[in-house]
Figure: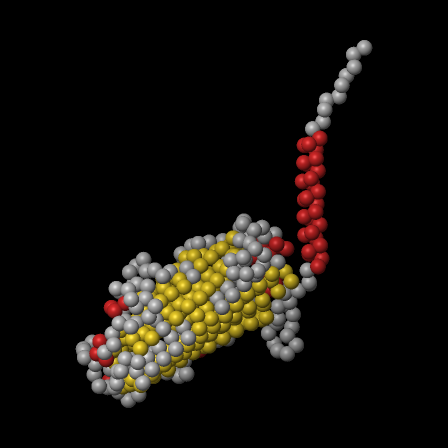
Amino acid sequence: MTTTVPAAKDHGHDHDQLTETVRALSARVLELEAKLKQPDHVVRPEDFGAVAGRDCTDAFIRMMKHIDTGLRPDAGGGVPVARHTVLLGPGPYLISRPWMVPRAGRAQGLTIRGIAKRATEIVWSGEGPMLTNQDRWMGVRWEHVSFRGTNPKGAYLYSSSTGACQDWAWSSCEWRGSWAYGIGLDGPAASNTNSEMRFDGCHINGSYATAFLWSGMTPAHSQQDQFLNFWFTNCKVEYDWGDFIRFDRGGFIRLDGGSYIIKGRRPDGQMSRFIHLPVAGHADSVQHLSVRDVRFELRNALSQVIFSRWNAGHITFDQCSDTAQGFRSHSPGLVAHEYDVAAGAPQIRYVQCDLVGTHRVRSGAASTARGRIVYDQCTRKNHRTLDAFLRIAAGGALPRPSEFSVSHRDDGDGLTS
């Protein structure tokens, strides 16, 4: 009699399949447990289908629609309040289309929180702005999130206001990559607000064809001078090229502490500036700039700390230094601070500052009555005589004329005037 022996089973293969099944079930159980523990007011992109490393645009759009349609009344006012806080995981979240889009009505009180700078990243590959705040959101907070632009025609936020857009804040956030601009503030002829924007411990990296923060995108609308109150505190502004802040309209700006470095050159050969104020003629109480305890580095000849055409108000640099690269060959030729005040008479003051290169002021007859510049306990790296350091031109002619007042007080290089 012939005996049939059953074929041997591949027990190792069965064991591997069982192990993977158990792992998958375990992961699903942990996911469900986490969701059950998740407070009702918390939402995550993953709840709407986001998968790290893949295009998450649809999930973010669904999440934002869920937030937009779930507002609750504000017991103390008339603007509805968000019910949800957004928690972001590691990502990267790849976004190819805008996910904050225009919507009727006003809303406030939204917080979007990540893990840490670069530990949570949103990558924007589309053209134009990723976020559009069309006269809607107030009181928005971003915390511990990185944003990376991969399309030089892209932007992070376009904010257009006739009264609503205000009180946005970023804490420990970062921007890097290529951008047309970072944040653009605009609006129609009746524009107002786009105000009270705060940046605390943020990192501005990357490159900007226009500027990281561009206020008054349509300067023909003089009402955009109502874009007021911008505060940067202890930020790391170390980017490749472009302008850091550009204010065609609006103002009242404070830069307090931090490291500011322009690392490269614009591809078009134009100047990169930390502070660009290119328009004269503003409303009262707008033209105010305070810069305190900031260390600047100008690493090439096509960079400036400031260019301003403000024709009134106050500009103050207090306990700042831009001499870190003063030993390099390009530094003596820098016009590190430049003012065109021919149309008016601002008050410009430097207090206990160490200064690189030269300063230039273009004045005019309108500057006679009130225009002045004061250097109080300052020192210079490259040019330590009065005529070599400060060039004041009237109608392009040198030497400096008498109508613009210049004062040196307790000067570190012994300058007097």
